[in-house]
Image 1 (cartoon, rainbow, N blue to C red):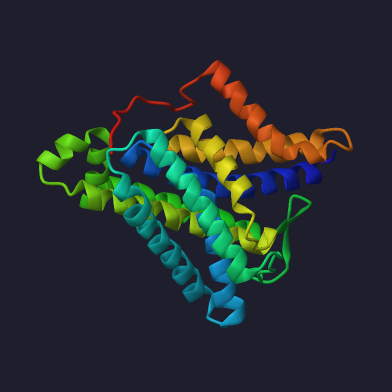
Image 2: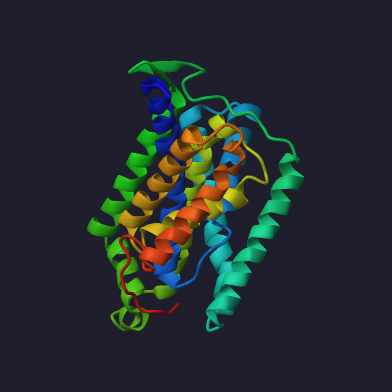
Length: 296
């Protein structure tokens, strides 16, 4: 394998890993706020891509406006999910809440299939179908959009948690919900905000990746599982770990498959779970794992 081919694999790996990182961040935000794993996270990715397709292609809304509206629409879906499916189960065992998220995932997937149909929908690239030559490798310009918007989203999340009252309140609820309630923080509203923010991150992932993979109603399951692997590998509850875990999975997937003998490319999806098992065996808490208190 030449240097140009390796560079292309690395570029594709970082791009896909950025998407996994956004989904992993979404998992972490909800986990920190509630102590549960939201297995509807992948469907938020799908809805982001499909709504973006409708706004951009069907209704001919300008790209920037369509992107913002798609992310906002899915954020509202996340808010409604917490309000209608999670909040009524307050006080139920954690496993019950997790099963509820699985149910929501199935419902959202069914709705997506009814509204947009079973076929994958082509989404135009943000800057057209062109590539840049970097070190002898042709890199799709859409990859740069993915990397740039992911970096902006990660920066915005960091600023939100470090420099806003809402972000501080969310961290307080993650550390000790009862103490946060006693000092006047509205824990219920904070949890709803966590679901909305998590859904928005996954929707952004769906928007930026849809020109590369197309938008399809059934694409969320695998993306959600890869994002979950990234969150676990990085250390569930750690924002930095989510980013590192997602990028690590994307890179190792693409490079490993590229270096594997011909005929083994079909096993690409299995590599994520092999990596997950190895990390869990060697470091059960993940690369950046930390202790947290439980509670909704």
